[in-house]
Length: 167
Image (cartoon, rainbow, N blue to C red; front, top):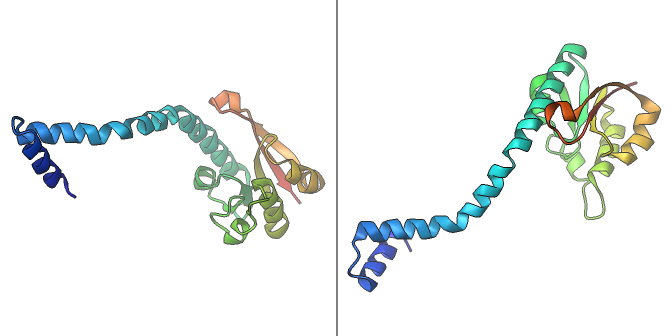
């Protein structure tokens, strides 16, 4: 049923109201249920801005400090990959579908990250501090060294980002 049909039905039910008034009322009634979601999305904008700040700074740092052929393993590859101009290994499986197939009902991003590290062996890892305990203990401590930390507080971001160089 289209808007025109609804306006016609309402015009029949409320003959004292003009079509423009009915159209406006109908528009308002259709928009009101959408407002809470819009306000909720708008409340997340500051977090998105802080993510952009820290991820772009980190990506630029990687671009300036890694060899062009280096690969980077991380959970969120978009902004970091854009600014770093490096090959990315994505722990969520958006780039490598094989990683996504590791995510099942009883697994986590940590499990997928460990699998991706063992399969693709990225040269560098960018990890949120404390987010990947299995990856840290089973792979990072044996194969990598911390080369720099991006302090989240400096960017208005909720956690630190650790950059590891691996053998």
